[in-house]
Amino acid sequence: MVPRPATELPWPGFAAGPTRPPGGIRPVREFVLKVQSRCNLDCDYCYVYHLADQSWRGQPRRMSPEVVTALADRLAEHARAHHLDYVTVRLHGGEPLLGGPDALVEVVAILRSRLAPCRLVASVQTNGVLLDDAAAQTLASAGIGIGISIDGDRDANDLHRRFRDGRSSYDAVVTAIELMGQPRLRDYFSGVLCTVQLAADPLTVWHSLRELGVPALDFLLPHGTWDRPPPQLSARAGRTPYADWLVPIFDDWFDADERPCEIRIFEDLMHLILGGTTCYESFGLDPVTLVVIETDGTYEQVDSMKAVGEGAAATGLDVFRHSLDEVSALPAMVARQLGESALAPECTACGQVRVCGGGLYSHRYRPGNGFRNPSVYCADLFALISHIETRVADALAARGTSLAAVRAG
Image (cartoon, rainbow, N blue to C red; front, side, top):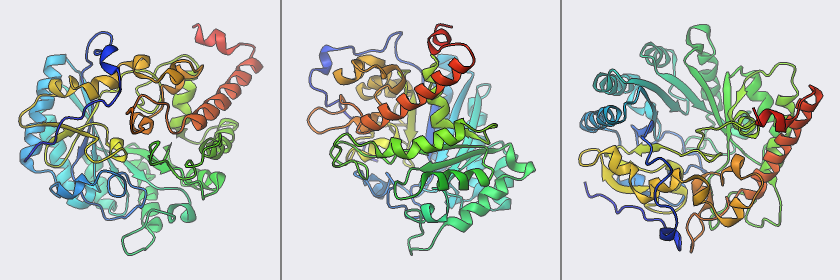
């Protein structure tokens, strides 16, 4: 294995600013394990296979037992050094179920045996097409949560989430979602991820997911940067197509007598608007402490960095030779923990900076000055947050209180 060079921060003048977050480097609590590097779908917006970084081609197809064992020892070492009572592991890919559910259970068993007494919270994120009853029961019996990806109704999902031969994945995924909705499995169903598709009707997408009875969902913005913008953001001119898509869903969800499920993006933004903090990497100013481990055992930054360019997520470190403290000390990792000090001047001057937090780190990238820019979604985020803030303030006023009073405690 030849390690890739460590990622540097291409921020002019950054060295003159803070180089350590307040209180020192934070321990890592969240890990994404790329247990499989290949996929059985061909989603044409996928950041792994269809964006700037094509390093997946050089990765082993699956994570070997040697990598899992070395990783388990690194996690245990890190947990002991920082007195962690739990860590979170997401089994990811590619498609993690390509190796079968027993392989995932074995990975979790090795991690738990080495980590004890530190608790391991394990989940798998799957496209759902291989999730049958036997697989679901195997994972649930091992205490592994299950999340499924789908982009809404049939028309919306089939815009991009198809098999390599062009076949629809919709029926197989819906079958998996209905399976996880059964009482014996529902406690292990963490919900669904849905990527925003501007070509689809937002309320049709939302209502289709609501009717499937999902317990929770999150709407994801397609990955992009200033030089490789998301769909319909190339000629910005102040347009906010993604906020315009999400606002009707928020209003329908917010105005319901009983909200049928959690929607993470909305709940996290409301939490921040009300004065709270969050560990959600897309918003807020809290330090982000997440590390990805590829199938070959190399550590990487958050995998959305693959939208930036070849090697942008790389650290040059691996589980065999380097500790997690060494990963945490890298400039690119420290930058995720600096809060407002790491943001562009336009962001620090913005009234929504505490809520927005500059948006997702990878979405800030622009050639020439790296990540010290507003998000490519800046106008959309400002419009969405402002709309939610107004709705929350009006709801509080109707109850005889104010947003300022709630924020003050």
